[in-house]
Length: 288
Image 1 (cartoon, helix red, strand yellow):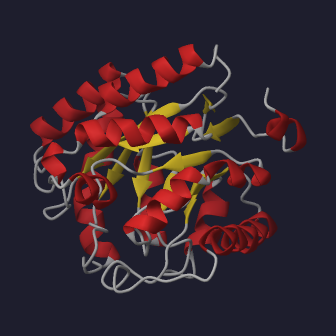
Image 2: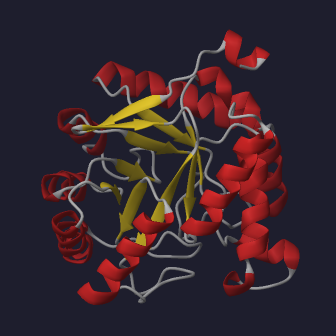
Image 3: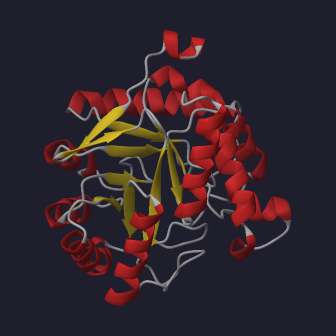
């Protein structure tokens, strides 16, 4: 155990309905988008056959969670309403849950209605890019559902978030944001919280790498950190490639995140992320 962990004991397990997820060693969350317009895999899993094949592949490759999303949050994306999102995610969650009942499913949504129906259909976690700011009922709903909640930092909203994002002190502002939000969530009775610093959500390329380098500072919360870096512009713009050719760069960034305390990698490519976890674990002698 590091000196930092001695001062700030870390929560290492979260309860996902009837399943206990052990985050004492990092785990991998597979991204399964049922959207027509996501930046990398939009439209690829719109039918049941391709959806279930991808879910099976992710689980076989070692995903601990599958995160199902029905609304693109890429820069410039427009929000869709809860009804349209439900048409996309509900059949997907129902199908995956029926085929793989032991799999832990997460729903990526900002809508309380979607969260409620998704959990009833088999999801066991809510992943919210908005930190409750787009739907006033979402946090109350999460508390009632008693499922883990991913709290992400976002400046602005997807349609405008990359229009000149600025901070006076990036890391301290994100820490302050989490201090306020986690206190409010605790008051509502939400305690299984995972933090996500929001790579690419209202951040410049330099901001993203500053956060990646500063991940150890977020251990002060004692909460698991999730990192969503996979194939994002912070990787492909830096390397002057496109998202389709950003796997190697993503794996490098994932490895750095793991070394800096990330406990949950949210990725498109599960096999490669699991391999990164195994290698970092071996280097650290199991203490990561």
